[in-house]
Amino acid sequence: MSNIKYTKDGKKVSIVGKLNNTEFIVQEIYVADDGSEIPAGENFTTSTLLDSPIESWKEKKLRELEERYNREADHWAQKIQKQDKEKSLLHDSAKAKAEALRKFIAVSDSHHEQLQTFVDFMAGNITHLFKKSYGSPEIEEFDGTDIDSGTWGNRRSVEGIKLISIFGKSNGDLSYRLHRYSDGSGDSQEIYPHTSYESALSQAQEVCDEEARAYAELDGNSWFPMDKWLKIDGIVIPEEARKKFEANAEKQRLERIAKLQDELDKLMNPEDNKA
Image (cartoon, rainbow, N blue to C red; front, side, top):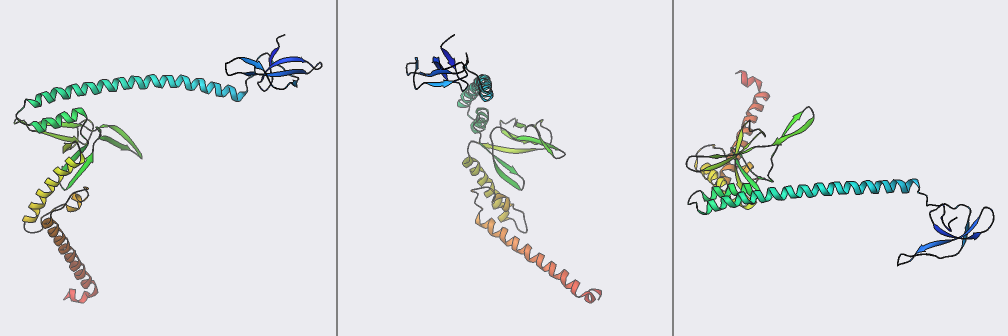
């Protein structure tokens, strides 16, 4: 019989002697700093000694969970490493293509800015889009995706990424359009890509100034979407256009009041209407 045993609570002990037929005198074994095991502490008695330490249900579950965690951690670590390699490869490929285009641009005498925009698209440098929709201008953040989503009943589903198309003219001019759906169907909207919000705002301000100038110069109740322009952070409405817009708005307000007053008078004096 070995002198090294284990108690029910998991202590490793050395048998010192036998007290009676049912009890043993034991001394707990501790582990020193150098890893050696030595008996230490006061002697105590116990009636149950085991050849190997028992494992509680909780300890068993914790051990199984730790083993599962280690297995899955290795699995996901390998998967992340694989994705990082694929991402790095795609990034290097995009950089190589962009560099090739830059070399082409360097020797090009015309359309430099338009080709640079194309290069920025491929290199992932585009951050904002200016959308010059009729009556609804806006600047939108761009992260490389524009989701095409659909609905069925009360559920919303993602169908894919909206298609961005590049159009070229025979004179070398390039333009970009964002389609309503991922397959390119439906209507499309012309977009102006930029590498910063400030750049997009600068173009938006130029378009706003042009529309505002035309609006201010036209006689009558011409239309100008000032409320839409003011939704763009940083846009400044030219003073002449602002004054005309506010004057027209006040004129329309007064005309509506006069119309309502006229209708009210007719309701209050029905006899006059018969005459």
